[in-house]
Length: 136
Image 1: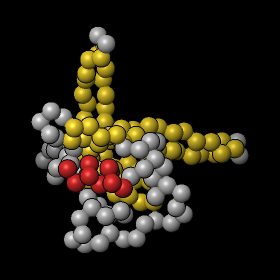
Image 2: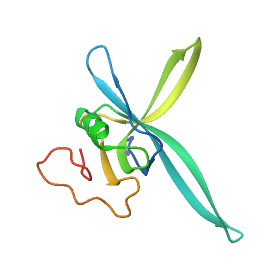
Image 3: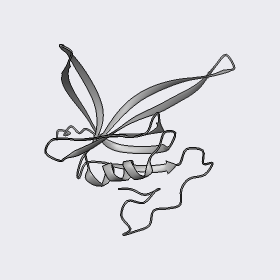
């Protein structure tokens, strides 16, 4: 039996800036997040770390609203989505982008810790919609 392929990404990291929202001509919206993930290690007794930056594109309506209302630079989030590649033209040059896409039925975002907080947010409330600390 052959194993089917799949495309699923889950990352946890801190927002490098406030979410950036955009509304398309047809009324659809997207919120883009810049997320830093840091990998620490020890080499020769010295602590070192490497930070990678990721872009998450939130197309899911409830995720866009949640990001606009609740997320700020420095917040610790978990994003679940799929990797998507796209290209665009700018000033005559082609640019290629890989981003984590959160779409209807394909992903979520979860706020783990607000910037400056030393403990996780309370557990999500059921049936209350997009709440800080909850899945959307």
